[in-house]
Image 1: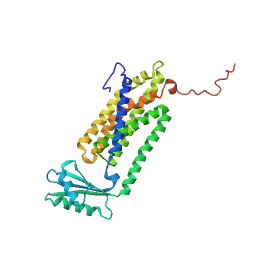
Image 2: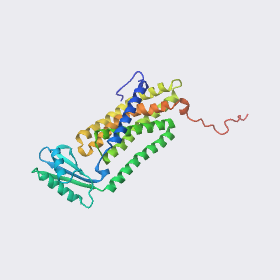
Image 3: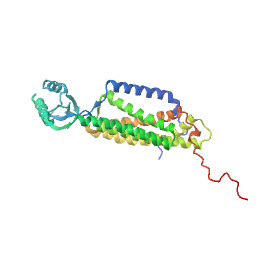
Image 4: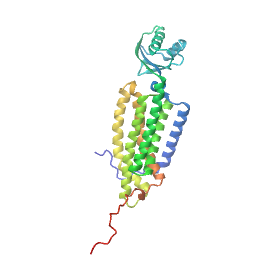
Length: 313
C-alpha cells in the first residue's frame, strides 16, 4: 500500500549544495567534539567498578560526590540511573583491591549520612578486557566498511561503492559526535547500535542505488541529475514506511525499555534519521559528483562464439 503518491518527481538534487554544507558542518563539529570531549566510555571499555544503589527518596548527587571524595573516591562518576532514586557510581580500577571490598566501602560511606541505601548490583571489569574491547570494536567497524566497499563495487559500480562507504562513514562519525557532545555513556550496547546503523543505512543505500542503475538503463534521454531525482522519488514510499515503522519500535524502547538500553535506543533513533538522510543526499550525491553516467551502468555485451561468421548457405 502506498502512503504517498507523487504526480511529479521531487527535485532532491536541487538541495545538494545546502546538504553538502550541512553534512560538512556536522562532520567537522563531530570530529572537533571527539578530539576535545572524546567519548564518555562505559565500564565495558575503561575497566573499573560499577555500583548501583537505591535510595528511598530522590538522591542528592552533589552531596554523594562530596562524601565519596572525602572517603578517598575522588575519581567517582555519579549519575542517576533511570530515576531520581537510583544512582550509578563508576570507579576507576584499583590494584590489589577486590570489587566487593570497594562496594562495601562505598556503601558504608553513603550510609554514614543516615540515608537508607540499598545495594542493587556491583560489577567489575579489568582494564585489559576494556582495552581489548575498544580495539576489537574499532576493528569491527573498520572491517564492516571495507567489506561493504568491496561488495557494492562488485554489485554495482565503484562510484556507488565510494558513495555508500562515504554515507556510512558520515553516519558513524555524526552518531559518535552526538554521544560526544551530549556526553552519553558509550558502552557495548551502543557499539552494537552503531553497527546496526551501518546495516540499516546500507540497506537503504542499496535500494536507492539499484533503482538508479535500473533507471539509467531504462530511460534513454535524461541527465544524471534528473534520473537520480526520479529514482529517489520512486523509492520515497518505501523509505518513509521503513523509517516510520523502525522509529515507532525504537521510540517504545527509548521511553519504556529502561536505562540499560537507553543508549542503544538513542543511537539507533538518531542513526535511522541520519541514515535515511545520507542515503538520499550523501551516497547519491557522491556518485553524481564522481561523474556517474549511463555508459558506466550499461551491461556488458557478450558476443556468442561464431556470431561474426557468415551463415551457411
